[in-house]
Length: 430
Image (cartoon, rainbow, N blue to C red; front, side, top):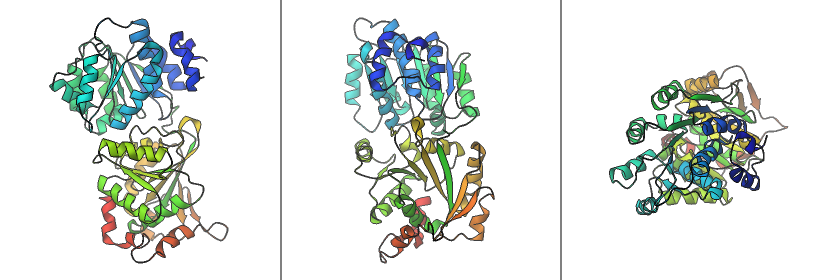
């Protein structure tokens, strides 16, 4: 099915082939006609399935191709709200690419950088704003943005914005928008909170769910390695150095923990970069650039910083810490196995993670494979945390894989093999 058959204007469809867009994805097939019709929409789809094009292409079509380019200074008619800076940059880049045939002007508004260039862009006029709620409120308070002409509002990753406490800012922003508008909500998970949000912010929305009862792409395999807290650093190094791995994204639950893990990996000889909310936008951009260019093999991140990372061919995601909210596992694991590619999601699980693991398992359609890695003995209490289903032992003469963890222990008292046994290593989990 070609894009033009969905109702998109031919002028937007022709350049898509050059971008590699030949066949619409399921979320695009179901969402684009709804958006073009002017109906509100609540859509659920796995990450990496083309959600940005699903709302971006028909938004550009309605506002510019069919609506025409207004005379004089352009006032924003489209608004996309996202939870993080990285996602704002990613969506901005995609919309700018899709909108070339329509002479689209799109402006990214987010914190961590100077507000002055953003003010200048708004003064010159723009068609669509892609913004994080906090910085957009800054512009509203300084009266440097006029949202009175917004016709289409999109909330991208609505569940994440609720998790991050953005509901009060969202309500303030929506009060500044026209009541007669089209509202689109896109998310990888649809919780009761998101349903309530849609009831407050939309009018009789159409529902699109292309997950077929699954919240994860079937191309992703899930595995759990039981381990004590003190040995997590050794096991992480082992997982990252067993071929074939390629590049990997490692998740920690705190900023301080991310720094500790990144430093540990560097001492272990693994090229790593760290991104989290305390890093400047410049540092985050450089870290992501180094990762994409292959100058570093591992990116260590918190959930917030990892949102919106545009990494297509990422073979491995490692949960150094399990997320406190089970749905966040879906977002983490959704960073791999994108666009039909295979991927692996590996979690390092200690006895304290028992309840978190059970909550995650409830979201997945089949039991997660539990593998005990040789060289990392499991105590009775830690094994108790794992269900019987999927348990097995990894090791033996045919595939010991023991050089990774053992090599770390041989690097001397100051080496990475010793560090996890120190009480201070627990700081990576607090």
